[in-house]
Length: 156
Image 1 (spheres, rainbow, N blue to C red):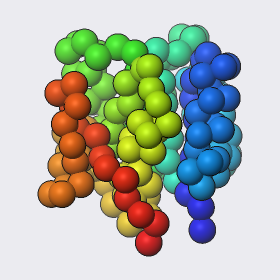
Image 2 (image 1 turned 45 degrees about the vertical axis):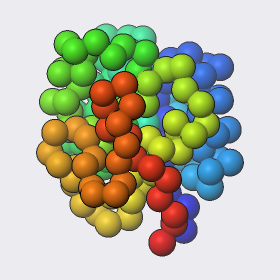
Image 3 (image 1 turned 90 degrees about the vertical axis):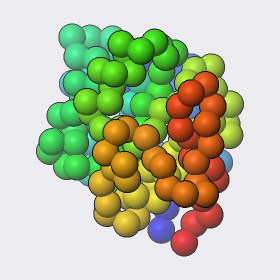
């Protein structure tokens, strides 16, 4: 059974590329949004297994606040997508207890790596593996740009 994903990205070309990539990887994009308010609404309506959320999105609510609200209501894994890897942004993002980060610009393999562990956690129904916003399962992480990203995880 495919993992259902909510994609929140305010750049339509990037969002379409992410949706294409996720489809090619066997994920099911159940909804997409370009702002935090719509992301929360779509999450409540579709109950996805995983949210892929850009941190800096248009509107009054950023992706971090939207992710916190989604997790508060339906407690699903969130993987952040961001071009901002500065310490302040990442420290703010950690408060939402994400299951990973994907740095822009990204390649298809980055989407696969970033969503793979979150999807694994969604299947298990478990929370954040380490409690600090990063996965640190032995044998399932790699370091890139100082942050943990998961390796490919085969479907169970």
